[in-house]
Length: 403
Image 1 (cartoon, rainbow, N blue to C red):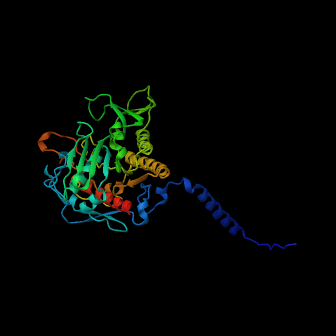
Image 2 (image 1 turned 90 degrees about the vertical axis):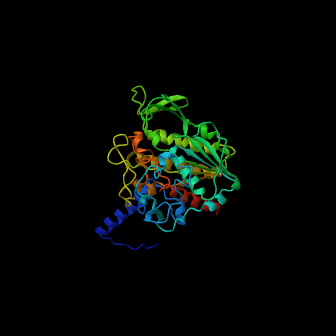
Image 3 (image 1 turned 45 degrees about the horizontal axis):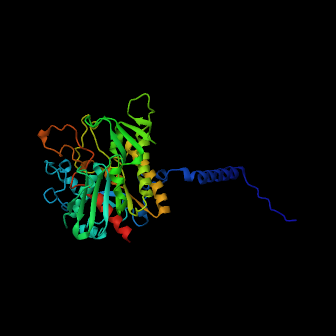
């Protein structure tokens, strides 16, 4: 007979020991359910996605530091700047907003090297798909590359200037822009009505052919969407109305814009995954924050700051935060599916860097003072300006793709 020694444990030991054991078991069970952005205390609380880039250096987490070098280009050396973002042409008096550099926490972000970028994309093609902020980034890229070469404007998909392609002959590189602010098929119910409150019909399970019919041969796709989802929309699936956002129709189920946003990204990623000949890399460029202060966008709001704010002074919140979390969740889903199909999905996570740059918008310097434009632009970004950092980040991601 084996004698098992007795251990006499005091009541306190039992209480403390059992409590610790129970807490440990609960944490083990619940850990998979706890959002990563709650556990990741090294990043702002609203950032749920810790990039795979962080194995070497997370280039998306950092601070802005003073940098007195001249910008890469100006409105005289780059002919691709739209007037609406051409802040210096229209008399913006301060230049401090151009004198900051993004500094990742644990490494350096190299300056943009146009020759290196063009060599990396030699023989390839790249398309920006989304709204005018996607075009804003593409024009930044064109200006950055103009230090080396200008492209040829080649035949576009349609006569509409929102659908364009450029060809860099010496590098056999095609750059394209596809206007698709909702990513899915959209019908404007009142084309001649006011842009801010007319109802749009969104077919959430049908990708917009403006990009989907053209994208299969592209090597890199930078996809984005955001602010257009704030407007009134009626949602369709399988050809039938399933709900709406701000449509003010009692006969239609009220759904949030986040429903449509989630479905639009899911459909877009699913489309890319289902294209038989598509073998490119998809980049999701995360939400670009707006910075209206002193009122809402249509009630006198403006953006008059001339320098970045400190980390934590501004953050994503409200609708912007929910949009960000929604798109990242859909990105993760697509990334998992992509692995099974051998397709790469990458996150170009600009949100943390840009949320503290309220100084980088045109405000009222995208037009002449006499033009009677009453609404400030605190959505798009001045060129040159902090948006050029998006392409510095993109270049680093392309370099890592190559390695």
